[in-house]
Length: 294
Length: 294
Image (cartoon, each protein chain N blue to C red):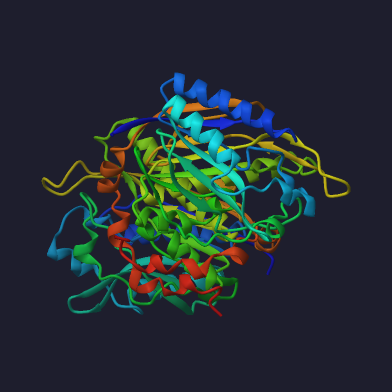
């Protein structure tokens, strides 16, 4: 398959799981009707971004794989004949939880899963409390449309992760995401953060000569209690081509479906003009396995 | 020193070495008069970009370090009390040549050198013929204004290189460069290439939370004989801050001095809000030392 049509679902979420998933499924059906082969949902699309505080009751929302969300989206994938990249709070065992992306192929089968490897933790994003770092490595998931380099949010800041996926044969990089602004930050700082987020991901496409898809949440979610100012999720979901060029880009404020054709053959031609993989100095990269070189 | 003033010299070059260096020195003096602490010259600023063909006579232009260019720019650094990042074709031994960046401190002393680690080779850029890959690693150069992560051109496409410099304590990333368009390429392709070049470098600043300086050549240089269409060097030299934001940016067509103040303290604050170094999965990065994972 040389060309695919990819879609990103950028939505807001409430505490009502059924409502959130119904909305996602509506967008998936719409995307399929527009010819999408692949639909990417945002990070933890089943609910609000609960990591704004550390609350033991939130673990109640975690679920196994397979489980209710897997079943629901598996049926949707099959019904709409579309591949779905979903995201959920995975319960692996009592006291052992992951932030996991799930890939459902067009026939509804589970093609594979990815457990978020890099876990953030900073004010309003207390993820280290909830999510055990992934232990499945940076392993592309083989599907009917190609090998997908699926990662999650914070992973998108790490060129190492994108590179490892590319070296393992990923044909696309895909990032379900939940990131936004602190409403108390100055507009210029907000703009720098958004620009940085877009820029570093486009750079992963460029460094590796493969397209990249980032689906981000949108809308304001207040912080529980005294835990900060809430988060204005900045949307801006986008699809970039093999040279990092924009193929489609969403806005910052509203729910939308972002859709583009992607020519997977461009990877071959782009990597011929910019043969970065040929010249990597693997003899001199040993320090990358160190925390710091002091 | 918390704040420095940095300047980039973006110039065109001819076959006349003395003319090229006189021009560079004029810009260095102008930068110093405007308060610059640091001036970055473009890649191989002493002459035309001779790698458009493979010509054994071109090795005549190589010189040892120290040698004529070192002496000339050392005197300029001392006279103007400014740190200079220069670039030259280094003759290490008969048949052994490098593409080398040279750092001259404000007192005219040689602070250190860096030998280009990643060597490109594609039509119009036949560098593998001329330059032996560097063997000094990604080692920052300690100077009176801080530790400089100096690399050269093709290195700028490798996130591994920028990361290694940052892990070794580099406070700035600096790339003397000679890159341009094939005049026969469509304008849209030219724009994608330029965007990619800017984007991936800004991403190195973002991934590592440190400022980045790229000084690029400008002007058209014809190809010798039948070796292609010549190169329109695209200039666009720029300085980015610790979040990848633009601090200063040159145009695509003319010679100019690009100058900005840089606040080195922002690295500390930016790395507190985005603590990427904390969360690197060094336990899972082993594949980065492989050519490909198959």
